[in-house]
Length: 421
Image (cartoon, rainbow, N blue to C red; front, side, top):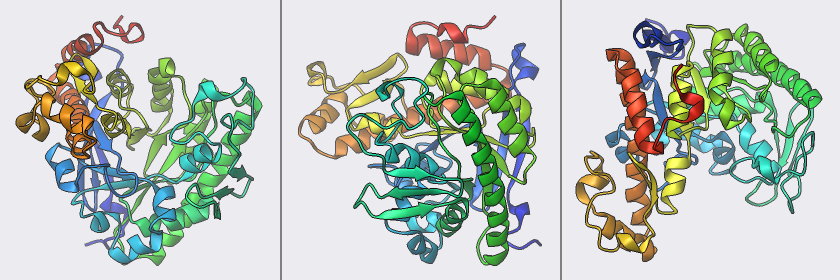
């Protein structure tokens, strides 16, 4: 028997390779990530529970709609309620009553993006011009200041000043207790100059080394807690040489897996994932941070990404948007007032089995919070099921057929960049 915080309590194994059946130059695969709180069948979409909750949805509902794991946010949980609280509760899973694996990010994305006034995402169109190495959203002040040792930042809640470094991020995430956590990295934007991208990449490499060292120290110190896997984060923007260099550099370190992060152009997503897949160790999982659109998911899967996360399914739900096989629709329209059909015919989610478009339209117009819950459950189930079907297609040799049917229905045609040669 090995101790509960032994590295042997985390593993990844590849089951089926897409190239074996698809007769295409695909790098996709199915596999199993094993953690102390359970297994994740990959490819898998991981719902985001930013503050230890998938917004408007209970952990029990996440399990019911097929969520295999939940990703929470180290930055937000550090600020509120505090990492010590989660540690005292027994870790993230116990704190939120989630009976399954959990992820936490490093806090780097939120420190950099919120620190530059971009709120939830970095809006590349909001920056004045390419080559802007101190990009700040219009009308906002910079709340984060980076140096080689770490980042000073102001809380978006009350303006208090805080410090994150690789060591502090590891200390926070160990207390949060997720099964998988990410190394602290610097997030750049597509507006940053090539010179700054190079400088930032080296800074992230040095921070990665410090994260590994602190992670090993804390793992030995906290032997009473289950083992937490550490993923390195690949940066490099749209530059092939920088992406490949980052993969080689971090691939040589003692990481348990890798997060594919940073800013990238949507039209280059599959290409960039492929660059990384070709360089990273084959026997370790790859998590693509922040995607959930159907075309992005298929493109990432077939180029070798194993897991993905995004806040979009619940975020758009709060604005009454819901997914269907024929595309995304908006329930606020008057035409739904007397539409007594489910959000999606044939959908097996709790919402579609029990409620009509007319009822949820009424809830939304009446500003009843239940509308957020019911649409969120449906949207999460829709994306989880789409990835589950892609995984089944890899396993049974029908991936290409499933992919083509799903994309044609959703977009009216297969997006040009994804058409098979």
